[in-house]
Image (cartoon, rainbow, N blue to C red; front, side):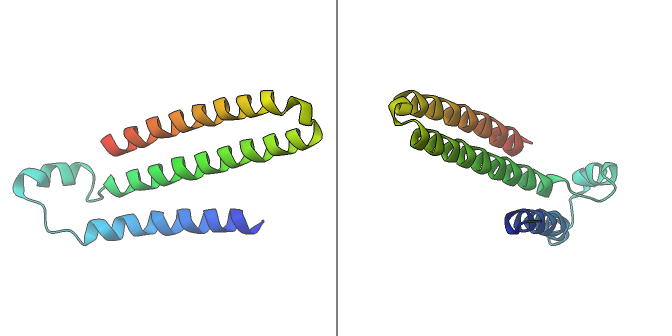
Length: 110
């Protein structure tokens, strides 16, 4: 496994194990919240939304990086097509950004 994949896996595992610890550090729930906590068997899933946001950002960063790397390589091979390649790269990156923002909003709204 390369270094980047190890770093991503380690970050995911760290975030996954830190989310329940943050839930345990909170004050005891009020009586009205006790029923909601009992339904979730005492586990607060709100920390996992942060993991979802992180995964969306990591995926977008990797995707846009690959788009840029491929575009630069293609422009180096065919300099006469640089304008068309750059336009396609910007459109593809904008679409990835749009999907990422949508995923972040969904994660934040729970």
